[in-house]
Length: 390
Ligand SMILES: Cc1ncc(COP(=O)(O)O)c(C=O)c1O
Image (cartoon, rainbow, N blue to C red; front, side, top):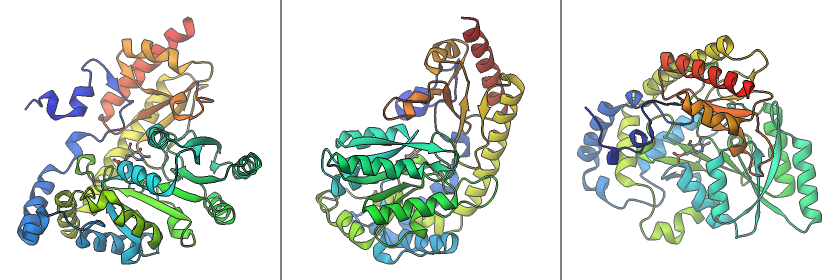
């Protein structure tokens, strides 16, 4: 079956001759189409017209209840019923959160590198951005502290830190436990809000996922944004927030929610029916197995085909490998690589101040099967060789 272009942004984005490792998408063949079809039918049968109503601003109770139970089991801290809300995914929740918790011109601190499209959302407000350098095991806490001191001297008070502590986009790295604790302590001391983007929590390949900042923080210091986009399907547009009850109350009573602009009730009900039937864990297990194999295929191909000087670290989860190619300009490499049939995102795009990542590239390993990942790296190696000769 061919998919008409207007039905799928992914198919529209794909260029047949290019293996595009720039796209942080799931493989469509791994999406649980039949299970979602069955879950949607069950949602309509079980919840009747409720499934097609506006629903509550905090989303359907069955999904919150399922999430509360799961979070308690996996994270050792259960959000109370008024400490969780269902959202339309992380992007939507982040946009709404900063609308409610900041005013234009406030300072948001971000890791450097960080998820480039969250930076777009923060800039829309607009917020002023301050970059926090990244060490091997998370943000440089001394540099973060010094940055806050500098901002205060300039009469600014940083309002929030947006971060992806677990299986980071773009680096795939995780903050260590010590850094998690230190950053939370700093937030409590300095009075800024941590906005924890937890998009990749379920996709762990080598062992348990680190604790969320939300689960170790005192009440009020962390808002954690979760999503079914990576663990189930991005098209569902369903996620959740765990936060202090004051934040949830503001979120749930704002004008957008009053006007019915909350989560998609039908999609959230379908996800509830899917999760209640016990289908979530097997799906996550299947994704983990598939993506682990793909990650390993990509890393093996890098070891075989790319020059010995390149630097790569094995991501323990998530979608991405961050590859440094010392001496190579990633931006100049891109057109050469695309002409040779492979694409990526140049590293500089993930630095909000444009300072860094010139010789780095982000490669997603989720969209293509291992053979295509290997072919992509072979083409990338040819492009690097051509770049070296110029
Ligand atoms: C770190 C991070 N946050 C958020 C998102 C988007 O989340 P959602 O689909 O829930 O809006 C992505 C998607 O690539 C991501 O990588």
